[in-house]
Length: 131
Image 1 (cartoon, helix red, strand yellow):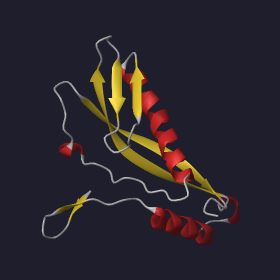
Image 2: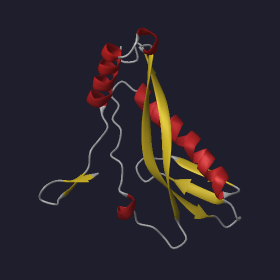
Image 3: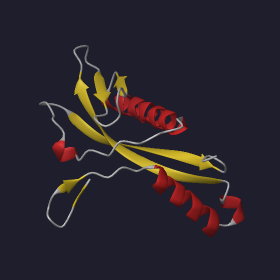
Image 4: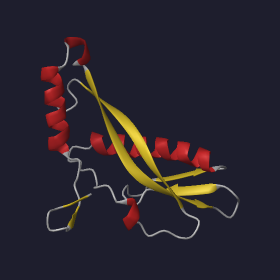
């Protein structure tokens, strides 16, 4: 998310063209041994809430149907990392994939007691991923 010169809020999507450009730049500029893979980090906010059973439940406002849970906040965050990795990997395996824009934490509708954590997932792209 960013603001243009007129102070209007805009969202940006990390789409196919960006990954393709990174991949091609990576292929052209890196030593041969590094050309076989490239890593891209995706960061999405997750919202965690204390559950009635004392554990935590989490969700990603930007990743549809992507949830996490754990007995502690730390366990829920670990589960959220895995859930986001699975969601993003699954989306990128689709023929016509598109990743959602990232919400600004200040724009999220939160309830009292909610905890927000930015979840970072690194995905490796290998030679031929775009074929």
